[in-house]
Image (tube, chains in turn purple, red):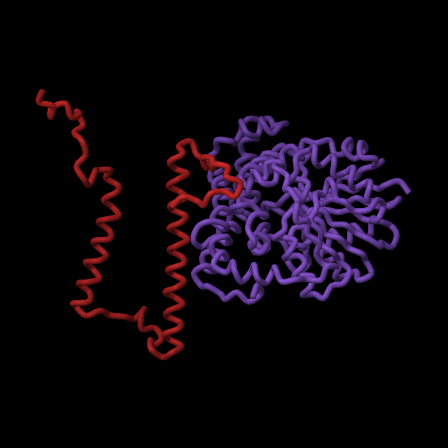
Length: 359
Length: 111
């Protein structure tokens, strides 16, 4: 059922229209905002050195106001309203729930019935997903649908998940035996690990039961035998110490308050075998006030408020405090050409944060 | 229609605003909803034409090449003019039902 929900022309037309507007915003409105910023810089003769200075310079520019409005409301239209993802798929709730609640082998899914969600997680509907990605039986399915158009420039055939998997395996510098993917959502980031590396022992960890059920269902469809999806907090996993060669996450850090990130790093250090690698793919802007202005604005507009404190965190110090020695923070090319100077469209500030546990 | 209660019971807050006048935020939301719905309707009309053409019910080009009879033309013209009038009337900013007098209602107080 979840793979053959019938097409509904009005829903598809509405969603396609919203995506077209988002692409305009990505490819044309963002470059125009940047051009207007540069024009103002030339006008005043001084380049802003801080985010506050960028705000003073262009915060009240009409195009910037439209830019913010469209970012906020294209996402709202995608998820909410009569043609929004949440409402559209709600009509198939029973079928989706029934299919996702079918038993899957225990090796694929381990839920924690008494699990208490952290309040930072339930108090904000991240991505403007009504009810968040945790409260509704179909939330994982809706999230999976929504993620398809989160960053329209991404190349789906050569996904960023494959790129991260390759980076993680290469960074380890030895054959990997076991990997844990923290905050794995519906398993998109976990899939290349278990599908392309059948000898790997893979664990996907996640707070949301609806996401975990979908992740396990997808793994069952793939007849995977080397992955288990488990419900747990990344800061307190309940997994055995030193079991893993790689601890990874994709877009998880920015959904947590800094105290939780620090605790998660300590837990990661505990989980890693000597010589293991911690590798997180997330968003950081360190040296460009204009990009910080965009990113911090996105944080508010997309209901992901912890992007800002994450961006202000001293990641090196947090890793040292957790027991790691050296930390590398590197730009990440999510698709070919993304880091090129020719690239003028809006993109997330994708960043790899890599650390090793002493051998 | 209000959104469904949040699963935590927490109250919804006022929507974010981006323009100097928050009325623009709300009007733009209405415009974009209308634009999206217009696209849905246009898509449906185009789809309908394709379905009818495929079924042979509607000869290819029949709509674009349609010439109305005088009676049909009069009906289409009347509907277009009424729509234009309804749309343009809003630009005048004049009430269409009688509100309270500008000078207040004290004059009706007979005591």
